[in-house]
Image (cartoon, rainbow, N blue to C red; front, top):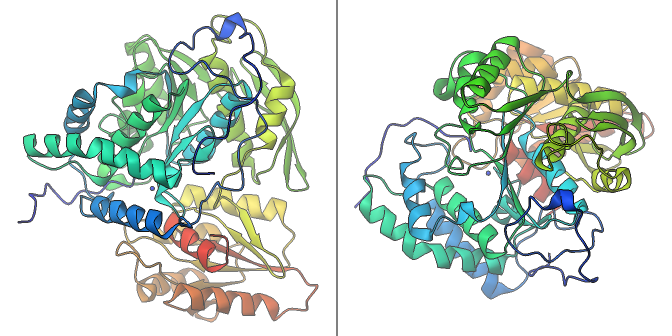
Amino acid sequence: MSEPRPSDRHDASEPDDTFEEIFGEETQRDPDLAVIEAGSRTLRTYGGAPQADAVPARPADPETDKALRAVEQELAGRWGETKLEPSVTRIAALMDVLGEPQRAYPSIHITGTNGKTSTARMIEALLNAFELRTGRYTSPHVQSITERISLDGAPIAPERFIETYGDVKPYVEMVDAQQPYRLSFFEVLTGMAYAAFADAPVDVAVVEVGMGGTWDATNVIDSTVAVVTPISLDHTDRLGATPAEIAGEKSGIIKEGATVILAQQPVDAAQVMLKKAVEVDATVAREGMEFGVTSREVAVGGQLLTLRGLGGEYEEIFLPLYGAHQAHNAAVALAAVEAFFGIGAEQARSLDIDAIRKAFASVVSPGRLEVVRSSPTVVLDAAHNPAGARAAADGISEAFSFSRLIGVVGTSGDKDVRGLLEAFEPIFAEIVVTQNSTDRALDADELAAVAVEVFGDDRVQVEPRLDDALEAAITLAEEEDEYAGAGVLVTGSVITVGEARLLLGRG
């Protein structure tokens, strides 16, 4: 019997196999860090966030791979991330029967339209630099479902992911039996993340919303720091038609007495956030006022920054990511970590500059202006709305000197496709439109019809299969002289980027 369904409204929420053996002796914590009282007190020596496994491949062991596929199949049988019944009733019920694991550690909660995952990764790296054990929950994933739940900077091991699912499954089924609708894919994963963090145990959780805020499944935590990355129009059929309406939904993560780290926002969105902060007696730190980017310059492999934090200036910070938007994400992440440690409101001091530099230098953000091939250079970016596309276009124009850039674009059907294509039109010499393998993908011919209106017929090529599209784009790039410097940008969807990453041998 098929399960009952609510409305077809949509939600856009995505190593080793064990923890590294902790080495070094217990060290004396700075008294100012005594606010961290949850979880294990074991400290690990910081050597930079693990990078090799930022996007893990399938498990090498056949039995583990089989078990992971079985879990993935069971999760896929639930409401996907494109369907929701907007409430936290079911996830709250799951937390109750699990013993409220989300209250076993403090948390930093992140909402916004663009930049959430990159900002979460930066916050995680900074916390790791101060020897705190972290749990990070982000979505969607680029290639592996295990990316969504990270411990100490690395995706959860597949064996642990399987074990965690087995642990929560009886309780999930219990809640399913009591509710009008079964827990969704995203709700079960959220429950798994919170349970895994409590079991680790972690010192702090860094949690990205799936979508919105008030009724997002993640919003059963009482975060001491609420981060709001830039808000723009996306998911307007579910969140609202204006930045202010969207901000109203996203402001739901701001809890009483919390500190709000507010990235640069449209005026109407900022007003909504500030009003909510006043209502719940939250403290607000605003980018461009209390913190921000003082200077930035392009450097080999990234950019060199001076950031003004809540506790002072931090100079000569190398960030191995491209684009002004990533510099702003870095400023937001730094302010969030300072706020978590009470800097600004309670203390007038700066964080250790060497730790800050080491943390930022270790940051990776797969699928965000990520170079995955050379000769010709192929770059991946998960931009899926106009604001993200504009940021990606600006970033690639600034960081790369392509004589000619070919776009490979595959989008989801529920996005502002025209707006995305218009953002890329000035930088693409030609575009190859395609589609990814999911049922959410916009048909390549439909995408081509819009692309022709934006680019003109002579600049558009249609290749429904992504592998053919990549081959066609690389061929177009290679038509120039070998040393002319043509490149390829694959974009339009996290799913498209993830599949391209696999096809290009990065999985």
